Image (cartoon, rainbow, N blue to C red; front, side):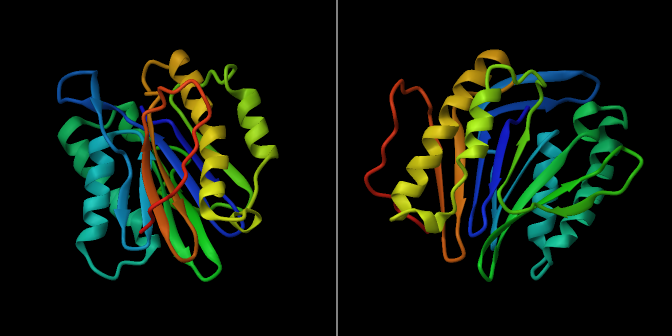
Length: 228
């Protein structure tokens, strides 16, 4: 079950996702896989990730990328079609399929923007929601956030735009060292997620993708960042 932290700043975005996968097999309840996987999917304008049933997310992203020139709002239709495919395969009563939702980033004129794709209940169509500036989205399976509530509050209180930093490295180190302890602490409470995580930073001009094993017990410090 995915643990996602997505931060929308005024001029940039940051998305992190853990690496533990849970797979549903036909005729069974959930099967817990200990695989370490990346849950982030690149597209020409940014990244797509989500929580819920992993195969449903994979099919949605593949369908969206299959057709050149699709606008970002078409992701809702791809998610609808993919859900129907998985329900034909597995039935309509799987909680993971019912609760699958996506978050997607895109370059825009003045920075980068996050969009959420979700349904309020299993009887409604999916909708696209623009994430407002200086907002943090946290998606998780285990609702117990007692171990990380203070860290999340501090993260929210300390939000700073990319333009506030002297350079890109300082910006990334600032957020990585506030997010890493959250994954470490919550993974001890929630066995369905990993303490390791992938991260994605995006500005109006470029993006950076990386992986944090998160086994350290001291502050992380990157001296130089290679971007795409």
